[in-house]
Amino acid sequence: MKGSVRFVLVAFVVFALIPLGAASALADKVFVTADKVAELVDADAPKLRVIDCRADKKAYKDGHIPGAVFMNVRKELRMKGDWETVGVRRQLESQEEIFGRQLGISNDTMVVLYDDEGWDATRLFWELKYVGHENVAILYGGLPEWISQELPVEKGDAVPEPELFVGEVKPQLLATSSYIVSKMGNPNVAILDARPAAQFTGDKKHSAAKIGGRLPSAVNAFTRANWENDTYLKDPAELEEMYADMGVTPDKEIIVYCNTGYYAANTYFILKALNFPNVRVYDYSWVEWNGKGFLPKIVGSAK
Image 1: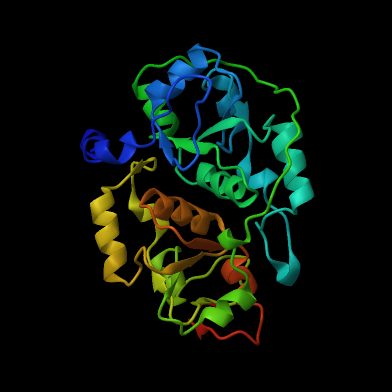
Image 2 (image 1 turned 90 degrees about the vertical axis):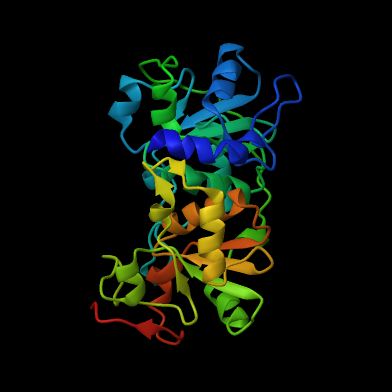
C-alpha cells in the first residue's frame, strides 16, 4: 500500500522540495522529502531546525533524525481555557518562549517537523503558521519514511541553543465562536467537522464535552481517514473530489473544527496541501461550543 501511495503523490510532493543553498526556504511548502532533509542535515545547513513531534520521549532518545530536537506537542502546546476548554493554543508570549528558547527557532529558521502518527506535527505546523512563521514543512511520510530509506538516526537528546522568536499573529488562520456565528448561512463559507463520524452525529462525545453534537450546517470528514499508514496522505485528486462532493471547495472560506483543535489542525494542513487559500481553525472547537448554552447546535444522544 505504501508504495502505491508514494506513486500517486509524486506530483504532489515535487513542489515541496527544498533547494539547497543559502537561500533555502520552506515558505509556501507543506511537504519536504526525506532525501532532501538528509542532504540538509548532512551538510549541517545553517538555520535548520528539525523537530521530532512524537509524544514518546523514550522513543525519541532511542532513535531520531540526527540533530532533531524533541517536543511533546500534546503536552507543551496544551492549556486550559475558558468554558473548560482543553488543548487550546497558548498566548503569543508563551508561544514565543517555547519556539525560541525551547526549540531554538528564530524568525529565519527553516523548520522541518515529523512524527509517526500523522497528527502531532500538523498541530505544530498550524501554530507556527498562526504566529507568522512561514518557513516550515512536514517530512513526507514522517519517521517511518526516513527509516524505510535506511537513513541515519542518532540516540540521546539534542539540546538547541536558545533563539529569539518574535511572533506576528495571523488572525485570518483562526476562527472563534463569535466569528463562526457571524458566518453561519453564508454560502461562501463551509464549516468542516474533522472528528470521527460518531462524534459528528452526537452518538459519542469527547470526554471533555458535556454533550454530543455538532455545529449547524457543518459537514463531516474524519481527518485521520485521509491518510494511508498514518503518515502518507491519500491521492490529492481523491481528496479534492471527496471535499467537493460535500461543498468544501477552494473558492470558499473553510472553517475547520473538532473537539480541541488537533484534528482540525490536521485538516488545515491537508487543505493547505491541496492549495485551499482560505482556511481557519476553530481550536477551542466543540468542547467550548457545546458548553455555551446560547450557541446554536445540533445535539446528539451522547451525554
